[in-house]
Image (cartoon, rainbow, N blue to C red; front, side):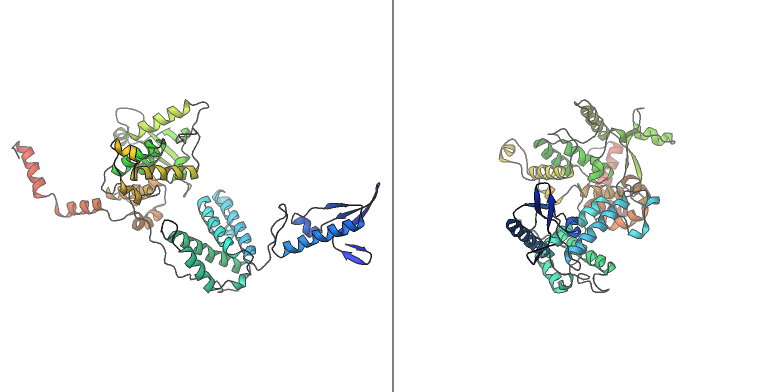
Length: 445
C-alpha cells in the first residue's frame, strides 16, 4: 500500500526502473489467489492514483457480490448458500471419484460412493438451488422459504405438466445439502429447514412395453425410427427389451463385448445355439453393480446385431461400437440419443399428413412409454415366466437382494399377468377345450 502525499492507496506501488519511477496496481496475495492480476499504471502519478482507486472500487464491488473481471473467481462467503453449495459440489465429486475406484481402494469415511448418473442428478438439483439462493445467508433459509420453492417448482410447465419428479428430486438434494452444512458446522444440528418439505414421493413408473405380450409397441416405434432416418434406435429398443440394461450400458456395447458363450451343459447349449452354430452373446460390465454380465443372444436379434457390427466395421474409418448415430456415423451421445428417441416416438404417435396419406396410422399408446421402461419390461417378462430372482438378476446385472426389492416396482399387474393367473386357477375355457378335442378326433367345428 502506497502512502502518497499523505494518502494511503491500497495496492498502489511504485518501482524504480531504468526508465524512471513507474506505478502499478499490485493485488495482495489473497486477491491474487482469487484471480486478480497486477496492472501497470504508467509514470503519471495523478493518473496512477485515479486508476488504482478505480480498480479498488471493482474489488469492493466484487467483495459485495457485484460485477467482476471474467478471470476473477466468484467470491464465496462463509455461512452463505454459495459456500455450502460449493462445498457440497466438492463432496459429490469426491464420492463420484470413489465410485470409479476398485472397492479395495475406496475410503469408507467419505460416505457412500456415487455413480456418475447419480452425481449428475445431484449436480442438476444443485444448479436449480443455486439460482434460487445465490448470495443468500444460510441462516435466512427457513422452512417457509423452502415451501415457497416447492410451490414454484410444482408450477405446470408450458405443456401444462406438473414437474413432480423434478420438484421432489430438487428438494431432496436441498435436504441433503443442509445435512452437508450440519456436518461442516455451518448450522446447528436439527436445524435443517428442508428436513420435511411436505411433498409426497412421486409414484414409481409402472409402464411396460407391450404388456399384452405382443410386439405392437416395439414395431410402432421401429416405424417411427425408420421414418426419421434413425433405424439404430429400433435396434437399441430391441436390445433393451431383450436383456434389460440401461441406455448408458447399451450405448457402450462394442465388438469386444460380442463373444462366444461356452456352457458345460450340452443340452442347454444345443437349445440356445440352434443349427449347430456357435452360441454368441453380449458380455458387459453392468454400470450399477460393476459385475460382468454375459447374456446369450438368440435369433432374430443375433442376426440384427451381427449385421450392424459388419456394417460398422466396413466404415471408413471402421467403427467398433454397435449403435451409431445414423446421421454422423459416430457413437451416440446420451443427449442426442434421447432427443432422437423422442422424435421417433412422436412420429409414431402422430405421423405427418404425407405419411398418413400413404397409410401410416397414429399409435397414441407410445405416449405412455419411455426408453427406461424397457428395463422394467424385461423384469416383467421374466416374472411372467416364473423365473426366480436369481435368474432375473443374471440378465439384468442386479444383486438378488436388489431384484427382490425391485419386484414391487418392476412388477406391475398387467392384463397378461391376470390372464396367466386365471388360466392357472381355472384352466382352459370350455370352448378352447372343445377345439382341442375336435382337433384330436378330426371332427368339424
